[in-house]
Image (cartoon, rainbow over all chains, first blue to last red):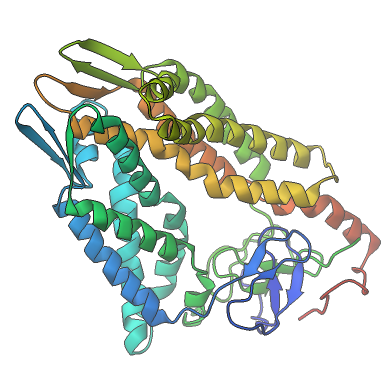
Length: 207
Length: 223
């Protein structure tokens, strides 16, 4: 069964406590909180879609750099072990822990990459005209993928690993480290903006 | 104080696109959002049962995650096996107390706190407590936001395994790393399946039985 009709967007319902609010116009960047539970209902400075698109493309480039160049290189007794973003996953896999490798691989490689590709797919056509086919399904998938992209945690892990190794032997910082810093920041931004922004561009559901 | 909720007004807020839709007349019917087409839920289905299930599973796995070996490191001087806690202590004694604190917070304090807080929240809803609702809502949002940082140690082990792979020195992952990773995922799933709207529903039920919401309250205009 399908609910009978779409009421105009005059109401905002708090996602955390279900309290109903009337839609009001506020100045840019103002934070609007729920009157009952205090959660943020809206704090978005109207992000232009172009800014999101640019961030997505930049993030994809940094993702490539972080995977192609070492984040850290460990040197011991004349031998070198460079580690790009994917290195931990394959190393854990070959060390006999495929399940752990899958957890790390999904949260630092697969989910972030798919999220970025989906964002690009959703945002790129919007810059030129109507949304791409399957737009609604893409947005729906993005919501599910969001919490499982843990690149910013991985970045903190790089720093901890760095501290653990510096007094053992030489650790050389690679260009991938700068890429992962930028990538983490962009992923936090792209993972936290209000997806309702993109839903405003969704075509109506076919009945 | 009675507050107009979407439920009391016969509306449903779509979790996917944030739009408000009319609830179907038959509460058992599977409604779909007219705007985005995703299933509509006034409240997440079987929220408490799922939260408890994930929490209990997380508790069970938390034991091996802390007792088993997280990481085995060997060099010319010998082999050393570390659990999560002994790894933190080693960092501390090695002269990196700051990083030791970061790892302690992410790997020990956050998961414990998360399991404890989620159990408290689930229990409070189950028993219909009406006190500290706003605070409970805030705690939930906080715990939901920080939970994923616990994955830190799993990534550190993975990186060390990749970097320290020589004939004279190597690092290998232990069974606790997988157990710990699964604990983090389970606690994240527990938070995902917990519906914070349930915290407020005890008050909402009052409003339902007494009829229409109080007109003197903030925005109550229907569609």
